[in-house]
Image (cartoon, rainbow, N blue to C red; front, side, top):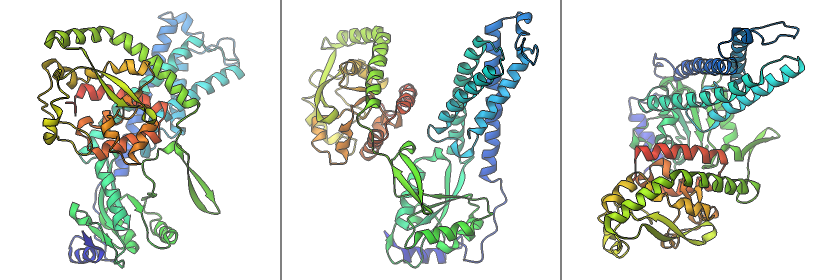
Length: 510
């Protein structure tokens, strides 16, 4: 830990740090914003191609090869007979325009969160609604079968296309391409926290190039240079630091004193530079739908909605869990029987392992799993405690000697957890939720961690799709609490799809 004075001395002695008023020449390179503009254009071309495939498929499925039927699109209307090939082109261009109007090609939505997919769905629904309204008002006889196929199929193809492009974008960003060059501004402690979050999520596309901190403060701060982060100036040097580093985004967090005046002056100094100014509030792990900006007398106030633990949305979740759990159980029944036979033949021991876990509001329940360890595994646990490879209250070791041969296979594929579908049908668990803890773990919970018990535990969750056993205890808790506070049905669907990918990748499973 060093003081801000130490950081100032480092900045003064560093030849890479520009002096106020004498900024280094801006590097001649393609700005990241331009690269993202090209990416957005490529996504638009892909969307147009996918919409074209959808409308052509809808035309073929509705009319087949009969050219006489195809020519009857708007017959009887004031426009006369128009071929469906023309209708398809008009519909595709109109659909693409609605997506653009809904912000579907804004560089800021690519690669982060579910907003990109939500905009595709909302734009597609809006386009379908507008087509229906126009056809009704103008008395246009557009075949309902054509519309009924084109829009659902097109929406599905668009979502798949966005998923593929997002995966490609994440790979490029991990290699350092298509990123935003970020300058961090604020108090050292807050800048250090922001830097940690950005470094933890490289796929978000933020490449930190430097920081500006108050140079007159004598309060201790984080050693920002430890991670190779250059200090490019004080709070009054932001414009010069932007010019010197080639930053296209300024992220402000934790300004001292009259922060509103400092922020206003900073925004004035950056006018015309084409730089995004982002303010990071002292509010973390809160999902966007719970945050609303409500200006009052020129002061933007952040209103944070309370977490939803009861009510109609929870009833919908319970109903969807039961329906989806029933369907998945029927589909997995042959696999359940096969695994049960393999375990029984392996060592003649019991097929299921029942373990007491803690559910919603601290209520204990028997959690079902396929037995993947020897029969007396619990008795051997005490001897293995010293080999625990996990921090916090969890016990995990990669090469656990208690695991059977069949157990190694089903644990690697997460098939040992399939019997928890019966816990879902019994109402004790959910398909998606926090990890079900042991009573001994709950006894070590603090007040903040105990909030995990406000919702039902899940077969899968954010911890499952974010590294599983490779996660630290702190990250596991952070993800579980984020889910508890920000649950939504769309989030559950996304996690279920990501679970399939995580299981196939077998990363962090042992």
